[in-house]
Length: 557
Image 1 (spheres, rainbow, N blue to C red):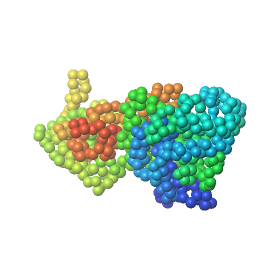
Image 2: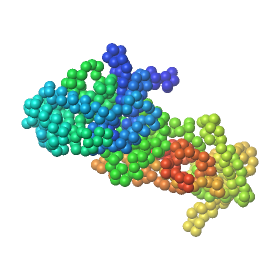
Image 3: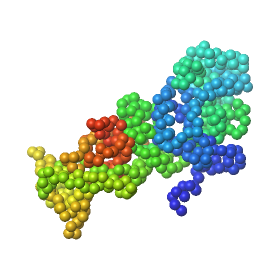
Image 4: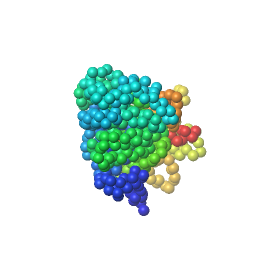
């Protein structure tokens, strides 16, 4: 059985629960939703949820909505709405309906009135600090609010006046009347509505009371006909409240079912929106789409593909328990994807000049380079070979260790697509630094073939010194130096000082054919992508990932 067949036959625990609901006829069609709050940019953890919810839609031929949980006008913005829509579409998904919790503000208000009339909600004048002080512990009941037994008529009057804007922000809330002794603290008379005098990105100044997430979420699911409300594990303790609201409002069945799964925790990364915002505002990174950020926009700018992120989400699967996923798996997925599709180029990032003394000064030769050895259909391109070339400085060593197979004094290597190259002379400056190599080629070895059967183990890349195109190359690495930066007292102390190095690289002329957003492989160096800051006069490349996991070697030293 192929890996694809195995994946198709495997069912995670969420799919098993959905199958059971379908088999017993509780639902006829699977309907999910992805419900982000538009208060920041999405990150790789959200990508997992997107792939899960839209993946269930595809698997069961159902539906999936994109719904913005826009219940807090202070933190939300249309900028985030637009970025989230772009990210979902970039990942390859399309929603059946675009919805907002604010679409349901009037209905949610009417349901709050219903709870008041049923004696299940009351207006409370306590401050947030006073409520917290009276909250009790899981084993000690909460102290009742002195306003808990207000009459229905008084509660209706006060709540309507809250909506009318008569009271200052923070002076009153609407709370559900549930169970002050419940071991689940979320059931101890939670807040349904609070007063916020701020303009909303969609409703403007129409409202000055806003529903809490717990009151808006389940009811929004119900309105949209969502069958399975997939949440991360931190919402497991919210599920009794989710179900209590649906029951207290006497909403007919079928009702949505909340199912929780483990959120994504990634090594060498922080996933908290608050901490990511701190990095942006503190200028520790250049913005939300800084290629070191775990945001989807940052990963996109770094050169990650939708296919690689979907592959990553599929490989990590769906779990019931929290764990930390090695970021190396994400890097493996992008290498797997780009190996098949990235155009190959030769580039030198730390140049050492080589003069080929047995060629005339004006020598030029056109060679043929393969665009992608994994895909013959991508064809070839021309490559100019001249008397003076650049090689990587690391590809030459005067006093090499035993297993060094690159260029050494008197030694010979293959030049990719070109000839055998022999080092005859090393030129140094007054400080003893190597500044130039004088070499010869074997003209009978064109294409790297041995003319007499002699063995040359090393093959190195190069570019023409005359025709190479200079470019700014940004060498991105992991943003944090520790595996779990959240364990530090201040996560910012774990920032990796070497997470970005900027060098001037020299790239073969074919680079001018590369388009913005096109993934390339600089042979032997890694995968790169043209950055959005590229102009006609200045090329800027971001390193997506090295060809091999070099970080593991660093850590083991």
